[in-house]
Image (cartoon, rainbow, N blue to C red; front, side, top):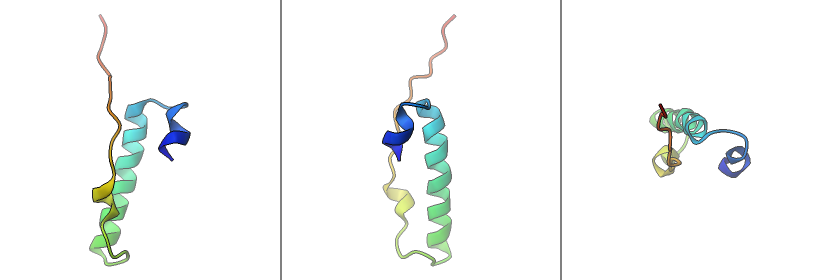
Length: 53
């Protein structure tokens, strides 16, 4: 999924999407819908979002 998005979106946008998916996986594990919290296994992309003046 990350490879598909990487050419079209900034790293910060991808990280926000990953954060949403991670939260959904954590909630699913908390309600015992999935056996393992796969949200803990996700990694974020490094961001380089410095402002230039």
